Length: 199
Image (cartoon, rainbow, N blue to C red; front, side):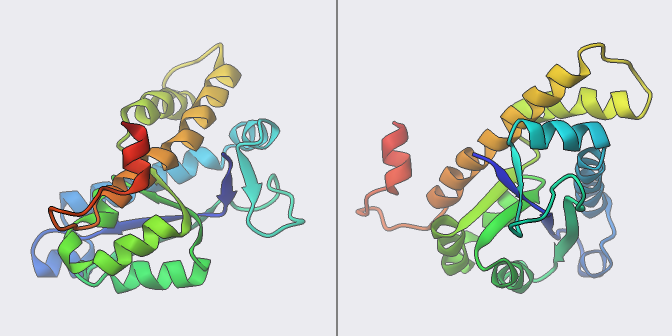
């Protein structure tokens, strides 16, 4: 499964109201920084070249050269977490098809009772969500970031980048199942089919 670029970032606010509105506070600032660091890694020429070569990445707009375009779109910050109008607007813009990176899947599904319609939309659409808290993804990503910042040197850098993309392209499947399982259900309802097949 490949990922379309550009990739959009999304995170939702927590904390006191004035912190949420300004994006202040450790929680909000750390989430934004996490997404920015991920985007920074994707901009490295070697990372882009290997991502395209191993067919992990393809352009959203047919005919574009993925090596020549910016893989990172804007980061969307949500303060109205019950209705999530910013996320709805982003899904409208993407026409329910594309790649979104989040600090963890709770940024998409928290307050599920208030966002049931949105969760169903995420589950039924063709959005590929990447959750940065996946342990395997963090383990693959962090050494690469340290390498490109000059903090360490990896002799097997190309192999590690290929592994990074292998993990990266498998993560949306896990997150989509978790999103589907977040839909509030009555006790007598069957679980979503994706969950049933995974057991």
